[in-house]
Every structure is written in structure tokens, then in C-alpha cells.
Image (cartoon, rainbow, N blue to C red; front, side, top):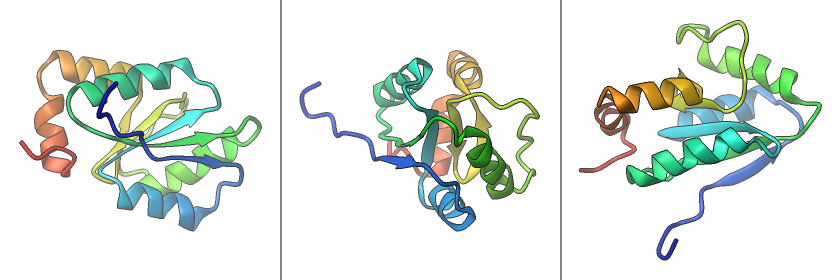
Length: 124
């Protein structure tokens, strides 16, 4: 799209605790994606349509379990991160939010935009 900024994209091939925690903390909205994950595209498009430019971190194949473990630690297990995690994994305001299903459900209920404002991802 014309005028649309490209999201931040970094490839993670080694889940380093400090890096993952820093990324979660420093970004209002952050998406961790499996390599080539088509559902990540859906999440990004929805967030872009709301005016959010999420940071997107692509996890290389074979490192998913390592990164998911680091994400659990970054979340401090206080955000209710599920036992079975599938990419994309979305963090909002430094806390685990969920995946595609939760993003869509929250948007349909009209609760996503206020949440994004509260996290500092939107300035409306």
C-alpha cells in the first residue's frame, strides 16, 4: 500500500532470554511468527487496518520450541499463556495477548482498539 510503513522484521534463530524479553518490553504490539506463517499476514493486515504498525519477529524453522519457552518466561506466565502455543503469538503492552483467534474475536467485540490505545500502539 502507498504510504504504509514496513513493519519491523527480525529473524530469530536462537531464543536468547534477554533479547526476547527486551523485544516484548520495547514494542507496544509485537507478533512472533513462524517462518512463512500465512496467519501472521492476517494478523498484520488487521492491525495495519486499525493504524497499528506491529513489530514482527520471524522464528526460523527448528527454533520454535526454544522461542516459545523464552516467550513464556518473558510473559512471566502471568498473562495466561496457553500450554499449546501456535504462531502467530501476539503481545500487546508487554503481555501475552493470544493468537489470530483472540485478535479477531476481540476486534469483532469492539474491544481491540481501546486495548491498543491503552498499550500506546494508537494515538487517536
